[in-house]
Structures are given as structure tokens and as C-alpha cells.
Image 1: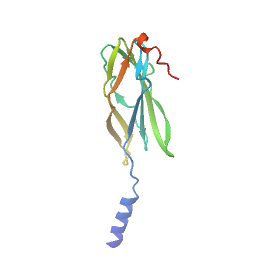
Image 2: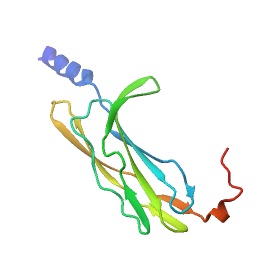
Image 3: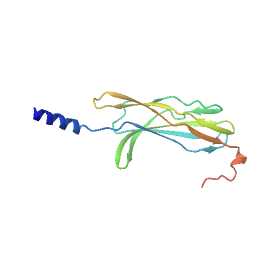
Image 4: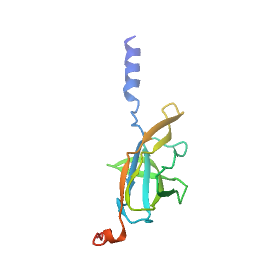
Length: 146
């Protein structure tokens, strides 16, 4: 009995703990002129591997055109602090039509990874909303990025 308990404890502690998938979200510009392209970059990371492409909806933004110029998801690997992660990257483009403050709403993303039992595991994640300032070209004079 003591040996059985030892084996069970050994098995429990030797199972690799896998962190949940992560979603990174960034925007390339926070201040633009009307009609200027803004790229929303999304990167999904996991210690396991993905079994399917991410599922997501395009954000709806009043007075802006939202599209995905390259609908494909780019698979790859990323190293963070010396640790290897499987990654999926994609981007969405936003073209605001007028001057003002635009809110890019949070987006829901479903990721599909392999679980410890080799079955597909669905993880639901959300981005945070982001503000975008759209100024007239006259207002932007003198705001040259270096």
C-alpha cells in the first residue's frame, strides 16, 4: 500500500504543469490622420501546440473601415525569457474616416490547443479596448515621430 501511494504521488508531481494560452494585442499607432492605416497585431502563445486556427470576430467601429488585408494566420515559435512557445500571429487594419477619438472595442478570441489527454482544449480570451486619436493634418503638424 505504501508503495502504491508513493507511485501515485510521484506521478502527480511529475506531470508537467502547462500554463494557459496567452493573447498579446498591440496597436502600431495611437494618433493618426483620417484615412491613415492603423494595424492591430494579435499574437497567441502556448507552451503546447495549436490544433486549429484562432476564431475571432472583426471589431465594429463607427466611422471607420475595418478589414483584414491578409486573412491568413502565421504560425511560428517565440522565445520569451529563454522559454519556447508556439505562436499564431495575425493582424487587422483600421482606417478611421474622420477626426475624433475612436474606441477599438475588446475582441473575443477562441484558441484551440492540445491538452494533456491529447484532446482539443478551447480557451476563450479577450483583448482590452484601446483608444485611437484621429487628428486633422493641420493638428498633426509638428508631431513628427523620430
